[in-house]
View 1 (cartoon, rainbow, N blue to C red):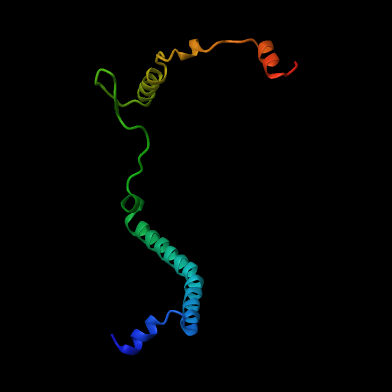
View 2 (tube, rainbow, N blue to C red; view 1 turned 60 degrees about the horizontal axis):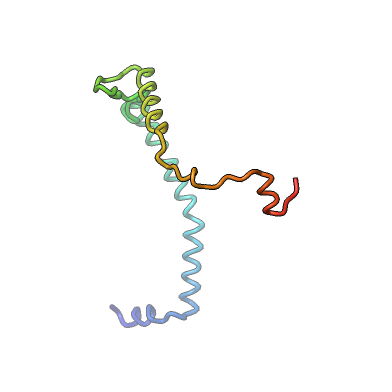
Length: 124
């Protein structure tokens, strides 16, 4: 490395270097949005030209509408949308409607509202 360049790099408090850095930073911050906008405009033009030339399905791929096949409990493949929805309903009903093994609420002493209010000093 050239000695003059080495000396310039090692001088961390140079006013000229700080000013040059601030100027460069400001220029980058000013030009970045314009560069991004140009990139997106070019990308849109490129995609539109490809779609016009090749067709939308070639550029963007086929459109997938509908439901993915699902298996029933016995392993049979379900393809109809209502059968699939019913199978999901059955699955989540079984998943979320299970009996609870948590019985600690029975151990909590129950008091009436009047008892609570007299205990806390509140009046109804």
